[in-house]
Image 1 (tube, rainbow, N blue to C red):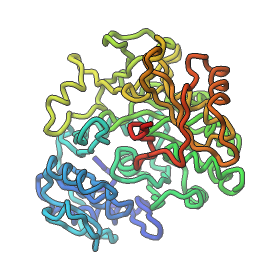
Image 2 (cartoon, helix red, strand yellow; image 1 turned 180 degrees about the vertical axis):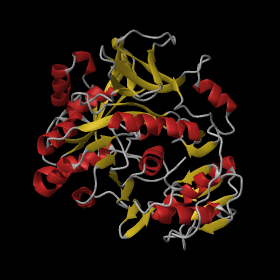
Image 3 (cartoon, helix red, strand yellow; image 1 turned 60 degrees about the horizontal axis):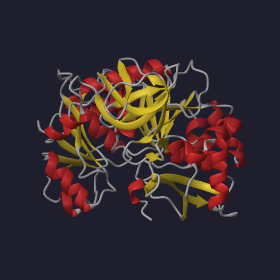
Image 4 (cartoon, rainbow, N blue to C red; image 1 turned 90 degrees about the horizontal axis):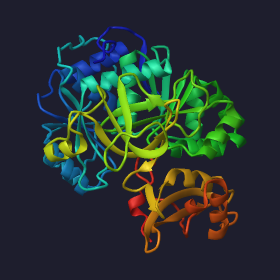
Length: 474
């Protein structure tokens, strides 16, 4: 999978603070570990550290499936993942205090020190073999293990390299967690596959981003929560604005980036933030391409090799236009099914091979995809209209008194569902429901105005910064 990892070259590969590894040193460290791995699945205690990168590289070289474990998971979730995936071994940094849920697993400590002498391990591995078992968030039940093949990973990275002109000359800067598709597949496998360098920040902080981009950094990957913090800091930090402006590409993903954050970052840096759209089961589906004019709020067009369509409630394909439909995709980027869940796999796929994403979107005449939310939580059916929560949230976020916003639906005896707004105020003045409703009605349409308002200290979010709307209960 990583032709350059096994090549004895002294080009920089990884940087975590002062810990650096060249490709020669990474190949040696990973090959030393890979030689003794079992043939079955191996779990990785996926801390934001070089140990995780050495561990996953070793597993890839050995041709064994990786089960990334979120170090912030609770005991119940960890037990479910371990019982479901049954890894034969756990790879972890030295001295890690592991939770009780992992007590039955054999543990091998990962040595991430540079090793320029161990010969690179080279094994022939089938492209359809499983490289990763990544567990979904489990919002509709226990998390499911998505089986991701080497074929899917390579197809996705090749498509992104073409869309973003991503090459071995790039140094990727990010502070994403390494147990998920975004931080692991794009953020670790991406630079190693393409021959570039990863500079991981350990944890996200605007100051760390500035330092990373002031140095060698050319690309920045982040989630909307991170870009929101950067947008809030650039006006008061000219050095940060200059560092962001000097990057070749800023990429946001995992959720929609609100329009106010787009506008603030562009105004301060002259740079646009490129959005892309993907899922655990599909990896990357779409992206705004480098040669496309700015289109804030859009996640771009389908990547090379990805077929994408919208379907209505009856499953019939919809024509291009502003009608909201469910996104379905197919292509080499798709996962190979859910581990131990044949019924869930069958339910997720159509008979002719399309994956049902559960995401709702529109597609314009240019083929640009604009997401409006999840079918289960972000599509509100009110008074005969289909309303996407995302466009209302963008209007609310433009109000000077709103720091964070979420929109949900709740049952209404007359309308079927009514629009409900949840906001975190900026602290200056908490806007009233009538004020926000008038603002939405004026900018969108009267039937999209919120009918109820809840004011919170903070919105519930997961580790990737996505708002947990199922936790928003009146």
